[in-house]
Length: 242
Image 1 (cartoon, helix red, strand yellow):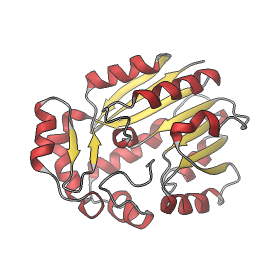
Image 2 (cartoon, rainbow, N blue to C red):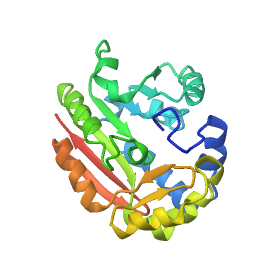
Image 3 (tube, rainbow, N blue to C red):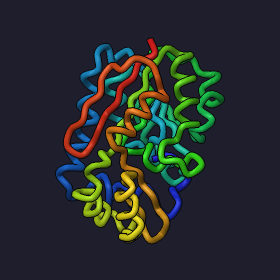
């Protein structure tokens, strides 16, 4: 996850592994496995450079190292970055970079990158604030500019907004030590205005995107759609600028 601890949340490597990676939740585990399965099946993936935006502590960096030619993992949570750096040092083709992805163009200016795929995995986009807008337009516009200049690709994975009330509330109950107890009234209010988001009593907010909102994201990013699909509790959008 990117950002120095999302407002109202208490993200540490130990908590994330305990409450998220090792969660007792079949649907969420299928989501995590589904992301990796999709990446493995990308044509020519062994020649791609993965740029993992909001890499957290490096949950998927080992997998990425096996299927891509290089991995650049970016994170700005200091606790998470310590573990991310340790894990990246375990592979010859993984590099950990500390920094804010809002400065992506500057961070990559001196790097020789070919065939990049910019990854925003596991609903990281949903906790990315952009002047309180649900869809971080400024960030996505910058991402498009960088990806276009490198003739690369963008792959975004998000929770289905339609699944928040039936699944998401129970899911976050299992993460309470990290995100806080649900603010029932605030969460229900987002659903009533068709802007589904989990809101906790500590102020943590995680947006879940509807199919309509994904269309907005596609419009912002432009490019050519290589693939888009939905399965279980998540959606994947894959765009190319080649």
